[in-house]
Length: 459
Image (cartoon, rainbow, N blue to C red; front, side):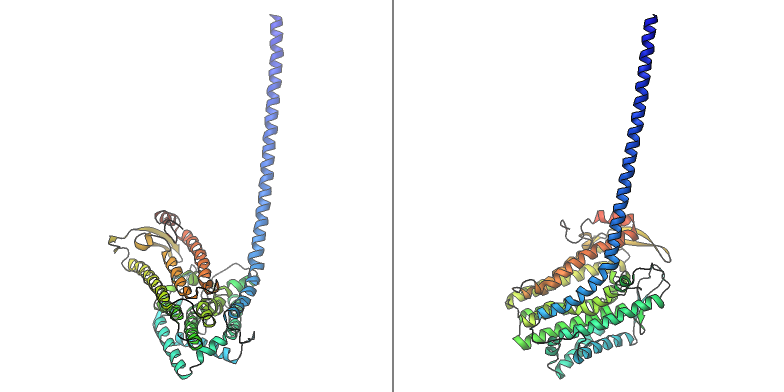
């Protein structure tokens, strides 16, 4: 019995030692795991900070000057490639180019100075309500009539504009830089509103802009640059290039289709101009190089490029083929108008209406504004139940239709539709980011109800 007891004591001691060793091992393993996790967390934090540092450098210090230089050089290069190579140009422009640019600017200002109906845009998050002049379509028609009167009195005006296009862009460039510098100084020293924004590097502030709704000479800057100068220049240049091509190469159905589709599109825009004041360009983008230079220089350059290119490179498509392109473009315009009408019809009847022969369906959404909580309805019927941005898809189809007369010349006549595809896809994500932040869970529910962005079952 004594031996047995001794054996038990020895076994107990061995077992106890084993338990202690096991506990120590577990503690050491736990400490090692904790240490490894801590090291991994610190490494990930360092990598994350490094990524953020690189992103900040690229966004605030590298991106703005690179974009400014490449875009300024790019528009002149495109004009050189698309022209007939017979004219020289100066970075300062010339007397003719400054006459064209300043007269267009004065004409745009006059349209906003004349007495008339005004439109109040959506209130900002800091309580400011921008005010615009609501005479867009009248301005469009009168401008076209005045231009055709000018052509009657001065038959070579279109040819001169085509041959001097690079100098016109150079003058637009200088005008845009002067305006953007003024807007930067004004936004920092004499802002229009009491909005408080975080200070950023100076080049980034120049590129992004300081204020959402600055005013100059009694008018809203973005209505002046985006609508009254940029889009009017687009229209008048497109018409000028068609007339210049007719004079140079003879009548072309393809060039006429290119110019006519753009004229219809721009006429539709000016008819709906007050609706534009609810878009991202107006409510989200600040008035700086990105938006103001874009409308003063980039729009007259790239947006007109298909028509400009066809002056020195006459369309190779037949009249019947061009007619098919015209029908395609008109169908896209009509369908796009229908989509916009559905949204306005829904809003006008506060959701108590029918689309496609059925009562509309929608999702109730609540959001917070500067004046408190508000409610909205997210339409899930009709075209807006097919895809969340089907109007963008039809806009791309229309732009393709007016670029198609340039078939046979490679990628150059299609630069606008390529650019617009990138722009609108990017805008889809910007718009949805804004809506998700505004509507929260209601937006997520809406995305489940309407799962496609632009093309049903594709994207």
